[in-house]
Length: 483
Image (tube, rainbow, N blue to C red; front, side, top):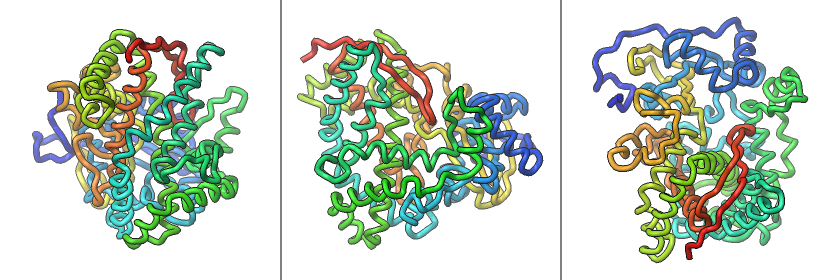
């Protein structure tokens, strides 16, 4: 295993300087060739795997989608190992301006004309202010995290049980969208969406809005739609923002009217109320609602596929701790060592956000396990996280879901869990780009497992893929006798 913790050379032997392998091909044609390989000819993982094997290197050059005509420059330096990847967390070395989605930026017409926090570099004055605004919101809602999240789960699992009983399967992804939106809205606004004008429209509006932003990174997987037609529709020209303008305005109005205390605080901090609200909608819709859509399905998939032995262990731990602590509390959750390890393992093997980008601020040398590479100022660096967090030189059996991986001495490996745009052992600050809600994500993941194993002894799932993440179907649930 590697003991290195950064891409700096200060703690490692001198490594040979190697020219970065790979090429970008001919202008225009090279990016399109790589785009078709990525989406259609090879698929996402195989795209990186074949090039890594071809060049015998975890660092190489390639084009990243979408390319022409959405992206003006698709050239990147790809990082696929746990040692080189963390350079993307170093704000002194890489610039994060407008790189949230990679080599392109969605129109600001989708965010009220503003570059919201996620697109700002820490060097920009508004970054500090808006990041502190997000911290302020989270701090003010801390006591509500557990009760608000748990309040939406009974209806979720009742619907899942009903569908399994009547249809033989329950589509978790579709059923859960309503719970996600209700949680976000209740947490931020302190009221139910049904009490606001948005009512039940919220999940569909957010989903359409997310689709317009992320469609250049998607493939629909429709067999009846020829690849070249889908490529023309999704990856060649951006979908026009007017398609969701009226719907987005409904969301904006609902948050503007219902989150007045949050917006008041933003104004006290010196943020224009309109800008604060658009940032709030982005935080609610992209970061939280969208985040949960790619967070929970793989968590449930991997735990479900792990089988009854792990289910018994989780149920025993969760029920024992909840009984001893007198309920589901922060203190109780902190004592669930296996539950925490399972959450971290799910975040390792299936990180919710697989991509990280940054533009080199200066000429620099980065390191993989066995070589050094020179990157020039202005070059775009791209890290594909599912390979970095399955680095076989760091993790044993990296492709396997190992529930106990992060227990005991295994906690030392948490510094190689990168899902939050930073190490799991680091904390978000106003000066970095690590996810403001990092701890909330871990918390609600634990809460989901707690709820499942307070209700059920075991369950069976069927998994697949959809758009940007996993799809999971519940096939059976065995109710618990625990009270």
